[in-house]
Image 1 (cartoon, helix red, strand yellow):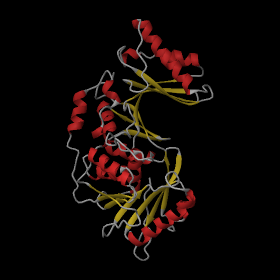
Image 2 (cartoon, helix red, strand yellow; image 1 turned 90 degrees about the vertical axis):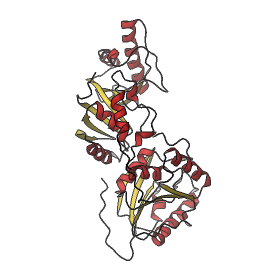
Image 3 (cartoon, helix red, strand yellow; image 1 turned 60 degrees about the vertical axis):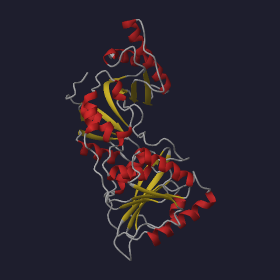
Image 4 (cartoon, helix red, strand yellow; image 1 turned 90 degrees about the horizontal axis):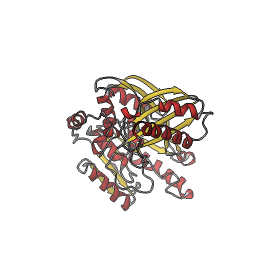
Length: 390
């Protein structure tokens, strides 16, 4: 397999709408040959960079390492091509493995069928070589293999992340509709927050946005809490290389910045406090039980609100319009000098806010297509600032 200094192609996966943010993250981290795709960014790096990408990227869901690419038009071709890869260079009989197939092809109608054929090809190769075969483990495999078939092009990858990178490790319990950590980080990066002005989420739920903001403000890598990455069970795993990345002095304490959260639900705040404690951020975040209509932001010249209010999943339909109108009233009266960023999939309710958005980005919260809207709240009349929403 690769020495730690040889470079290879990789793919970072993300949510639709966050591709440009991930591209910028990768570029800042030092990736080369970057290429935007649909819910992904292709790039080049070495083994150390692959470890570093898993450890540092806030908007990546997983980092894949392609190991083969070929044309296929039927299951026999697929089986034979998979068998042409020497799988014993990647894992041993003692290792468990799993297959994840994503199919966009007229030649193959079911991803489960593709998964089965790939599994058979790998198992048969081991059986022919060693008279035994490794076991499949869907829950916690040592080696995760990704199969992507687009039309007649099949790409085979190793998943270097293991569990999705949104599973940071600080969130042990959630409320009913938790915001995905990668989406939360993407929202904050899209907002253009300077990591200096006051950051507020007045409907913080289990605290994902305020935790991600505090991690950014203090330059704490999102991978610091993870128990394991997928590449740690690879044959070429370099523990010293990973230890060096962990031991780098990444954290830059930022005592000046205020990160504040509140929520109407006592249960949600208790969960948020637990998650904040798990992340070691108790001194970095102010949090309290308070409905948004009672919450008053600190007296500051400027600040930012990034929030994910209820929009149909957590509130009755007949109450949602009135609630959004009260949100707009609150923003206009209490948040002078603030930039407001609001995520919602309820277009009718959004109109009740009564403010004209200066920009909007389409994002996906699970299967829900949402609008991420920016409102600039000024004293008197000022021209709306141009926002960079790339």
